[in-house]
Amino acid sequence: MKKLLVSTTIILSIVGVTAGVSFALQNSHSQADLTVVKERKKFSGQVPAITLDEAIEKSEIIAKLKITKLVKVHDEQGQKYSEFEAEVEKYYKDSSGKNNQYIHLYQHGSPEGDFIQNPLLEENKKYVLFLDEVDTGTEEFGKALIMTNEGYGRFNIEGENLIAQLKHITDEEKKSGKMLSNEKIKPEPIKNVDFEKILDEKLNKKSN
Image (spheres, rainbow, N blue to C red):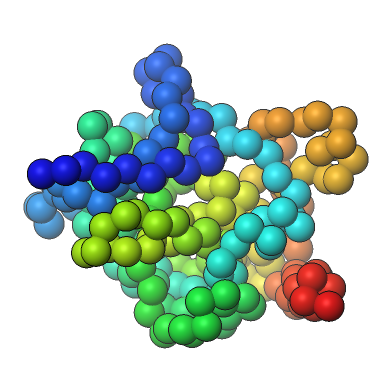
């Protein structure tokens, strides 16, 4: 069977070996493989840094959603990808125009091992996710949603606050040549209402 890969923007280092990440939708694990292990392995990687404006521009979908279930884990040449079902509570942006209540998205990692820069999403938890649509080149799966630049496309919801998984760089940092994320820098919480105002302003500005 032909294996079809689609490259993403994150470069991950696993056990000291650096390789470009590919996105696979074949050779999936059985449901028995989805049992959460007691000690999940933690890997580290390097993620290309982007500004919030770049994340907004690149994303096909920006939405507040709840992860309803881990559907399955896909495996390609030792790289594992978790497929999640999510219920969308609110769309901020949807270039597809479908506005589906339920969507499927994919994340690099599995219950067996995930990444410090973007830990595995959790069932029954809510997030604001920026999602990039990639073409798998297969009739079965078509286009698939992944987080925009991994942790840069993820805001964790904690009460009335949102906390970015990775701190977006500023325009000044981008101009100075900053290239990679630094997960040791912890983003400041932002009120959900304030975030929505900022996002609305930026989206309206881009549409004008």
